[in-house]
Length: 285
Image 1 (cartoon, rainbow, N blue to C red):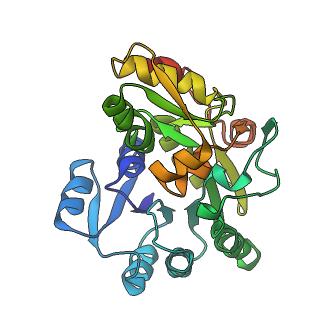
Image 2: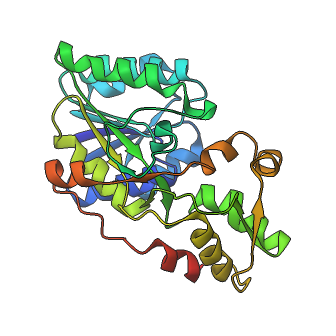
């Protein structure tokens, strides 16, 4: 199958391209710079020069493939929706896989699945109208699928590294927010890449939580990160106000208490996360 990937030079994108190539697919990847083009070429994709705002480029590239996986982060909801519409117009009846995120559920109050109510922090509230419009294409002959990843780890581990590990190394202790009893719905980047590829065969209108099914507490995660950073398990609690001062609006997302299950993707796609011990990964550094 010929597949167009946006965000191919990024953390998730390179893992997805590798997984697609391993499955025998031909991959084209949007590249906004020479550096991005080199990065996608290095993992086996043909670069397509352009950005998410180049709607004609997106439409033409999508028209030349059988499926699209949209991973790139847009600057605004308006930009994301415009890009999605251009690519869905281009790919037609081919599969279009759109990226959301589990933060849209807010605090889950226990283990939930994809149909849980939304209660997003302001940071991701823009996702609802975009996903609604994407999924509505199923009623007009399209094949939209939405994947909502949890918080990623493995490989570069960017968000966790930027906001917790690196500041922890400077401060001598890794932070967690509040009493640390809230949970994070984690997923390993390699498992998530396999889910995106599996989603290419999903039914139109499907939505999947991209989570590993292991939801440790933030205090457990901070302790493991501390060991991995050579800090002997030292941690420190931040109030939400302190976290906002240090991290900005994303602190409200990190403060969420979320537990999600991958049961739907397991049942419908046969996807089985194999990385189920994130604390050991964090502790190894």
